[in-house]
Structures are given as structure tokens and as C-alpha cells.
Length: 349
Image 1 (cartoon, rainbow, N blue to C red):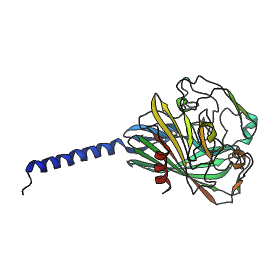
Image 2 (cartoon, rainbow, N blue to C red):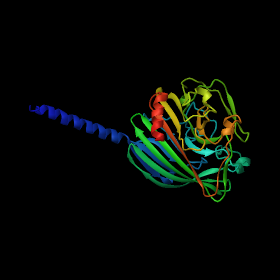
Image 3 (tube, one colour):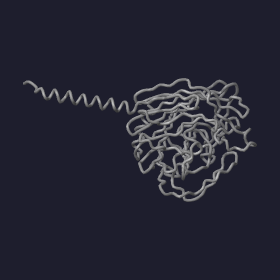
Image 4 (cartoon, rainbow, N blue to C red):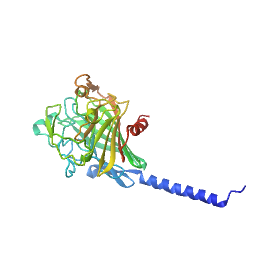
């Protein structure tokens, strides 16, 4: 039997339409990494639209990714201290975008350092200084950025070299950031003494916070107290869930391989998830996740996070290295634990 010509025509047309749709999707999720060295910034674009930027402004004491946007364009990170927005909190000026550092490195506090630190405290602080963009790539659904930074004392003596490889993934309704960070001790032993402030953290947009009904006071490892005011909770809908089934404020100080924060931005559902890798020191990490919007994974502060039941004082001998691997998901939906498990399986594969 001869197949009618119109069947072939329909098949060819269907293939053509499918090809056009695939090409359009590829363009929509094409990742570009664009350097602006004079402005201390590297932009990451998806389909020509901003996703995030790697920035190292002189007003910060570390490079950060800021701001971070969902595929919808919604900004999921707090604006302050770089670009304050009405109605958001203005506490903890060292919480900017997505960052990586620690509260006690050879006795120096890299976590809490900011322009707001009093001059008398400056000798106790460390700074992470951007040194170089080593390379970048663009591509359909994926782009990369490689950077080098130095962790330096108050007198500008380098203790650690940091080499970080970022992978930026884009899919319909999803954005992912892999951060693979290798720290190398330079000419002396580097001690990461057990401390609750660390290591990878982000500060989320006001609407993604968990509703807080009372003012709070938080004391860092050096005894500095930061007051977090009670604000109007209208439009604030964030909620933490861990891979171990912990919910809300119960996530803080517990171990889990991932934690997700569900909420909304401008009324549209958003999920932010942070994934820990089994190859990391201290896996599964402790979670330093607070209702006021500070969201961090800390594998090194075990005594601080376990009420003294465990302790880890990690150290690097001269010229030795350690690598930390994390992934951040930003999804345009209210995800389920099963959704995050699928991403986690891909991440650790």
C-alpha cells in the first residue's frame, strides 16, 4: 500500500515545528558570562536576561553572587547592603547575595567583616580579595566562570588561595548554580576552628523569610550582638524543609544533605534549595538557617551547632587543599521533597 503524500507532509511539518521549538528553547536558555572588569563585575545572562553577577565592590569584604533571579526574573536575594529595597531588613550588613567564608580562620573572622565593623575590631577580621577571572564559557543551558581569590589578614598577608569554579545551569522554570571551591593553605598551617558562622550562605528576599512574630538578638562567636527587629509579616511566606523531614525553625542546628525554602516573590511561587555533597568535609552539613532570611550550610561548626555534642577543628597543612561542592536551586514553583531529591541525585552523580 502506498502511503498518502499528505502523511509525509504532516510528518515533515511536525519535525520542522519541533525543531523550531527546540531552537527557541535553546536560545531562551543560552547562558552567557560577560566580564566587566572595570566595574568589578561579571554578569551571567540567560537568553540575554540577567540571572546573577559575580561582584567584588570595594564596599564588601568578599566577592559574592548578587543579585540572584529566578527564571521568571523575580529577585530572590535581599537588596541591602548593596541596593536596599523598601520594607526589607537592614541588619547584618555582611549578608549580601550568596557568599562563601568562615567565622574563625587562624583566629580571624571572615564571616562578620563589613564596612560597619568598628576600627578597634578590624585587626580581628579577615578579607577575601578577588585576584583574577581565570576563564569562562558560554553555552546552551550552561555557562561557567573560574575565579581566584585570596583570604588575607588585616595586614594583607594571604593565608589561603581560593579557586572557585561556578557552573550556571538554565532550564525552563529553573536556575541552578554549582559552586566548587578549592581552598589551598599557603606558607603556614591554616586552622578552621569550630565556629557557628559558615560556610556557604545567602540572604533571601523579604517575602521568602519565615514569618517572625518577635524581635530577636543574635550573638556571634566574638560576642557581638545584632538585634533583628520584628517587622510586619504581611506577604512573608517562607518555610524551611530539610531532607530529614525537619520543618521551619527546627531545621536550625540539624544535619541534612539538603534544605529547601519555599515561599513566593511578588505572589508567584518560588523554591530555593541548597544541596550538600557527600564528598564535602563534615557531610551531611549542619544548617545555620534562620527565620529572618539568613540561609547557610555549615559543616565546620559542629560544636556550635550541636550544643557541644560534637566538635570539628579542621586544619590544612601548608600547600594542601580541600574542596567544597554545593549547588543552589531556584525553581519557579513550590517544590516537594521528591522534586529536590531528583535534582540531588543529578548533583551527586
